Length: 160
Image (cartoon, rainbow, N blue to C red; front, side, top):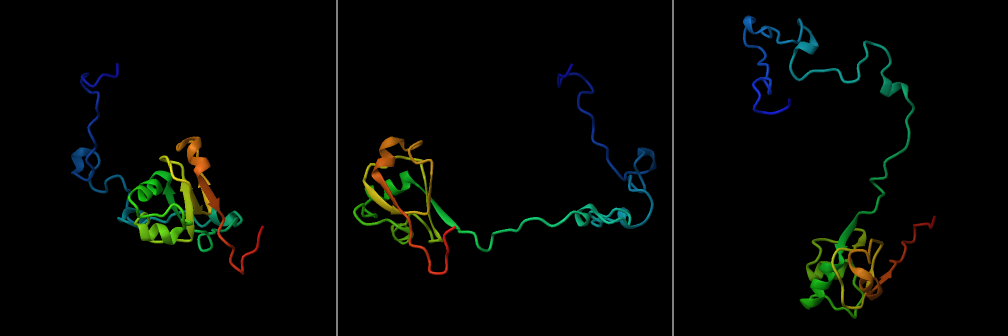
């Protein structure tokens, strides 16, 4: 039986360091003296002098965080709401600067990535670095009314 009404269903928590009679008093299960008996001190990855596993294995890969593009993600519904409110001009090309000016984004990063949540009715050209699932959430109409323009590459950048 696993019912909470059965007596003894929940075991009481063991209170450590509450006297000899508790069975977990004095050292409280930490053994004698030494580094591991102290609080907040533990040798992570120490294997008793043997070369630790994280040092035996070869280094692999790198992190691209310093070179990665940080993109603003915008849903189609947010763009349509800004167009309906008269903050965005659907005739002009919509880029990160226009979205910041319209109040859709707080600050421009390296580019804009479109997300498919919401529906867009106006036909609009958006300067975007990528798209995720446009047409799934916004329907087929959303895909037809959005023209994606790739931003111009910087001079130092090479195509892969």
